[in-house]
Length: 341
Image 1: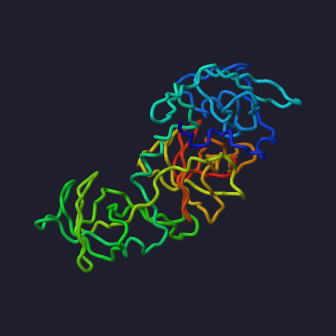
Image 2: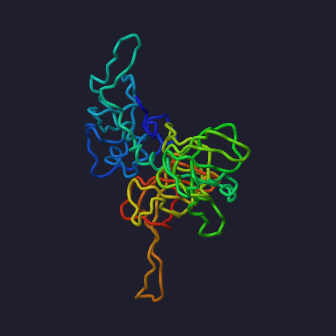
Image 3: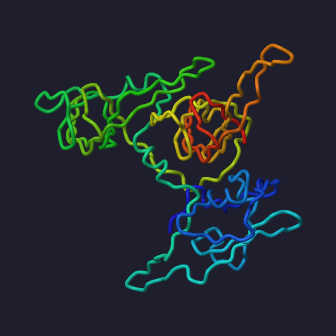
């Protein structure tokens, strides 16, 4: 039975459990979980800030698995010492155990996830950030195709030149993408590498390796670079949390190239691990207030920045991060600000 991306938001998080939370005015007194729900969508029914979900949870000692919520379960809002809490009433049937030469568990209904995993999993398979400016130039590169082809595809042989370690035997093939620089300081933050395929090393002679292309998303060209595989799965122990210290950053790119950014879109931030960001950190997205002419006092005056959305950091690098937009009250865009929620 799989865990959710945010460890189902019911991991013991005592800090937020003691915090004050703001309920929506139209919250339901009782809600029955249905198929297709996510913990985020349920939290959005109760809270102005859905990432504060654990503060509402009141553990039920009678549950065998208090960290899982399933379709059919009923949530009831109560007050404990004046603070809002959610209690869960569990349906009787939750799964079966089949006995055979081995014991295996087959759930009748999977626990609901916090957010759809597929929203970011496909993205993680095709993008990589290189922290060092020279990392791309130092990587092995495609020097020739079979029979002197300049373009190659799945099943073809290619030849690459460079330093190859005994492990790994498979490599991702990447093409150089955008070089990210900080809008304020001009510092190079990283290079985006777009994966276009993968190959298996079948022979190495000196600094020349022969590879068979196992998969391609577009034609492999001479000069494309090779990198060993890196972990591409999401950490199943995400816990929603504010950053450990104050963060003032910007959305500097939308890797998928869309102009209007909304819920479940991926964005690139100009802040990373060195700035205190970690996987699971939640940030508010702020739209810069307009500058208008004061018709009474004269001159121009800037309106306050307005909160327009919420995102969660799901992959961090030293100087950059990827974030998933969880909610947006209006279209977001490059150069929108991000800060602690």
